Image (tube, rainbow, N blue to C red; front, side, top):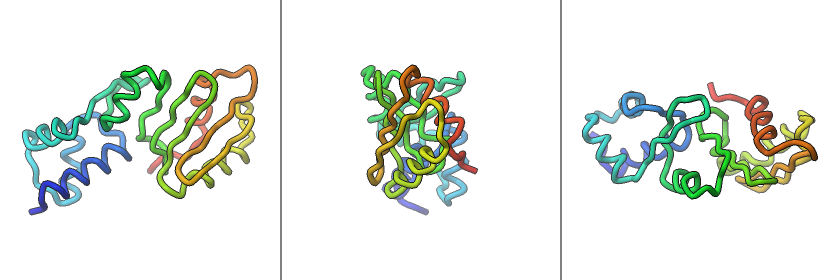
Length: 158
């Protein structure tokens, strides 16, 4: 029997790093990690954690942490790709002129290098820190076009 603090930590990790669209999917993930939890308990945990369920661009839904939901609701990120399909990537957000990719710690420079080496026609260049990449679009392309190009190029999780 694992305790609530451990369960909450695992839920946070799953929500931040995978595409989870339903409580059933999340329950299955928790059970695979050794947590014997009911749907009612999971529902209470999600409410306590303020996890939100948002619509994705493909018409589905995905759970996100409250800071991500607040950013989207506040209109700060008009274009947001949820943190589920790209290895090492936490999120991609677009302002009106730049794209910011948040990564797991230590991933940014190698992902930025891969983007630069791909010579995507929409990308002029990147600047990377430890867990953040600034993507500078080439003139004539919108940030949405650049983000879609990046999503098509970046490695998918298995």
